[in-house]
Length: 133
Image (cartoon, rainbow, N blue to C red):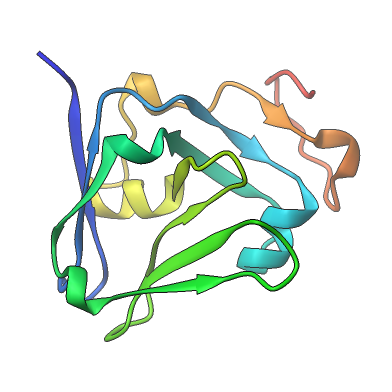
C-alpha cells in the first residue's frame, strides 16, 4: 500500500494530499529557495509533481510565479499559508515545518531530514551531524 500524507493551510480551506515517500527530505540552502520563500534555508519534503494533489479548496489556491527563477509558490488566498512550492524540475516541495504543524510536531521516519544541499551557498551555519553537500 502506498504511503499517503495530507497537509492543510491555517484556515483549513486548502488540503493537499502527498502520495508515497518524498523524493528528497533535507535542508536546502540554495538562493532560489531563499529568495522565493524569504528564509535563510528551507527544510523540504519534495515529491514528484504528479504525486501531489489538491484534495480540497483548489479554487482557494493561488500560485505565484517567481519573476527571477523557474519556481512557484502556492498559497491559500484566505489565510496566506504556503502549501507548497515548485522547483525547476517540477517537484512539489512542502516545508517540513508545515508537515510538523499538521501532525502534532512529528515527522515520520521517511520524512526525517538526511542532508543539507547547496551548503556551500549557506547564509547561516548549521551545527548538526547531517552530511553537508
